[in-house]
Length: 282
Image (tube, rainbow, N blue to C red; front, side, top):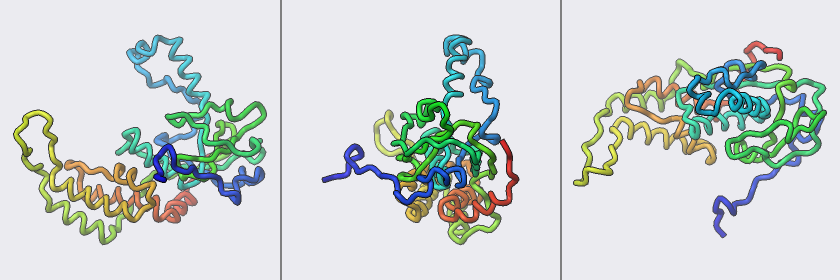
């Protein structure tokens, strides 16, 4: 029997997961990644940056107001450190967020929150949204769910802003002045590789695909070899995050790639950095 996507076995919750005990939920540290430097925004106005043209295309102010209300009704998501990093990689791959500054948040919950009994199968829709009041009925602040997509098998939480007591934040990926040996060698190879792509081959004028330059090809080979060191379910998204363009400075690219790898392979370093960040009360 082949494991096609639709027939492959689903992950399930670890029965020993500490998050399955209600009392542990507010005691545990939870994590989230976002491009927002002030997540979670307390006075969220989803329509604040919409232009007048966009408002008109959406059907006018009444339609915009209803859309904004739906956005405010969405649950926030927090989960394991691994799920937060996976979320960042997924966004870079799926939503074109390469080059956007991300932030890793450590989240502490209000000690007196009410936790929904049991856990849910991942309730997210195809874009990852969950309507808060559909999973957290009145009197409930937090709902646990089995995360299928990020750190599959781990418990994540759907919750509202009022369930969050405090956060700490660090910008990611983190950079380091000291370059590992692979990065030094990569810089040498990239600096010596041509940025001029080879001439198109074939006689058909239409449908030709421009071949990458030798420098870009070298970077792709390097990122593929680095991806082999990572968990299988992160490799494709890592290679997307490590995408190279000929206008990038090789040294800056290797620092970025090293920073992304550290998020996965050296989480202790990232968590130590979070330890030193101020606590922001909500």
